[in-house]
Length: 352
Image 1 (cartoon, rainbow, N blue to C red):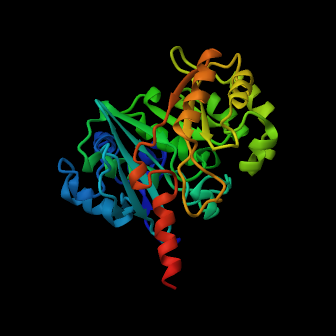
Image 2 (image 1 turned 135 degrees about the horizontal axis):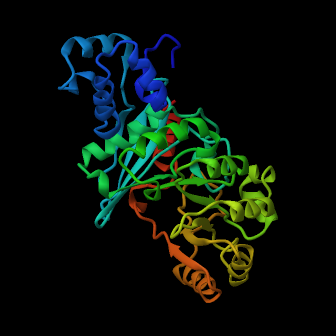
Image 3 (image 1 turned 180 degrees about the vertical axis):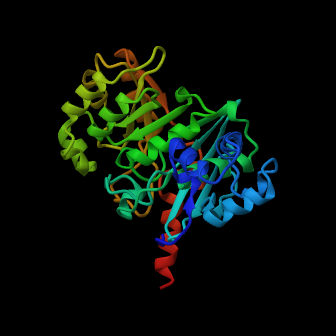
């Protein structure tokens, strides 16, 4: 982004927004009206604020912007209704978000970074390397764009930060984004997924309102986890589990343990037993995620056969672990993190 670009009001935390508007907006109730247009209705043009005087709208447009990232590609909806969005940012970076209808509720999966420095070997985003943090406006823009296009009522929305990037390495901007989303969506309907950044988890625990927490484990022992998730050498598995046991969970809420199943690597009966032992005493459920194969990733990484998936899950259940299986919603639209961007980048490289 260029340094002389006007400030995007969506990038300001709510108290800073009120402070900025207070210098030019009068009377004070107009500030609340503007907040309503932004935080609840999610508009991206000052002219849409029809109850704000035209002169004030013009003054706002001279000083600020409320622009969202531009959609450059939408996949054809999958058989299950899922649809993936590819956005371009002002600096040319591209990010993804996913719309996932689920009966009477709808989930939107958002990116928090343009790329990812974590480097998980099973993730296409990690394959293309680190990128910058997204601003609150760039995260909120993904959400409001999809919510508007599908006319989804706010009361039926779930939000998951499971797209490109590591949310807890973009902590301050994440918190600002959460504070805006909380205006319309309860914290229990929002989930932040992390690779296990312990300092970020500890800071998240201090917030007065906390989203659901999902943590990628992906192997029941430290050696294999560090093989496929190199950053975890800095945040050892034993210390992570101890941190999760300290994490405050409201009644009826629990930590989700994300576990990507790789054929012949971490999907055996003994692996399931080891995972059950690892998380014993933790208020948690396991989300088993059969691997999404991609040509950009190592050839040895394969999706387990359905029988292997079932045996792994059955072993966990028999050992008292609550389990859900992510049955590849949106698999036919490359809905795994980074896959649509990966196709776009691969095509660009091929034409050079």
